[in-house]
Length: 259
Length: 241
Image (cartoon, rainbow over the protein chains, first blue to last red):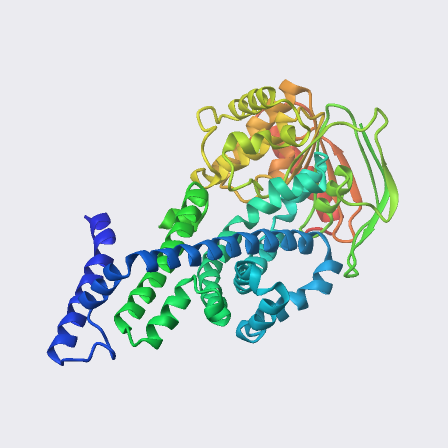
């Protein structure tokens, strides 16, 4: 019964909210260019299905590439930081700088440097920068949290630094890495959308462009349909990464067992 | 098997853990290193294991450096691995073929009474069972020298006694040399053939007490007499102030 409630309660609440929204818009006769009703949004989605879907695929592609590259780069740098204090002290401030720099300020520069003929590369780079830091900080902490006694034991049995990294540090870091990835997944999507906004009409492919276009034409229902697609994508990314986290940790980590 | 000669150790925070520590352990002997908290027992063990370097003095192995097994005070298991994978760790690190490593690890687990628990994860095991896995891990490597750093300190008395009996059995079966760190007079008097009593920090050996045979159980007259002698040595060393 509890599992049924766990699964259906969010859906029930969603339908309740949509129902109230539909009723409120109709009851107070809110103009559709101010706030479209859910049914109106669904109709706009159906009417623009092929263009919205194509844009969604473009946005999702850039998001996945950005997230993957950010994960690989962050894990690689975290390993370097865990093995070398000098590297950590030298490079960590630059990583922090990347994190705190508003990406909207540097995105146009990145687009110019990479070139508008490779706009997807630029967008992936921008989104990757946004997604990078949570994975780096979480993984670095996890790698440095490995048990000293366990490492001593491994050294006693002649383990190399590589073996200690693979068999002890990386498994220790796994919960932190996965937590960082869950945060980074949504950030990669946000970063992609920001990059698409900055890239503007020259690209005319992703969901951000559909949002700009619909806004310019006062097709607010279509705008909301694009936003709904983004929201669903963000939820799906988070759910997929949560599932991965549960699957990898379910046998041994308290967080996965409690859930 | 081990010759510890005039070993001193000072840590970077200024603490002098050991000063002129000297002792020997013969092959197949079961020796306890007993002393108050903070006297340098664990430091001594880590120096013997090669995990720490002494500032002065040296460790000699007249018959060549033995294969060492180490058991920490905490079980120190990999929480992401099951009991078999934990017991197999030393063999995996030494690139022993997987089939042979699995067989040896499973055998070690069986010897410590954990047959049937090979696929259990550490969080599914009790404290005593986790310590058994830790001992099995040390045994799987087929050590000649077994170093134990207060392995039963965190356990209840019943479990401590049971594991102590198992340790004696394993020591006899495998012909091990054992250096056992403890702060328990009762434990050292029952388990060991010889007890090295340490002074408070900076630690060195204050007394070297050979214990008679006939200590068949923890309450035998010979065991009680051994406890008396050890307690006297602790008092003389200033450890009971």
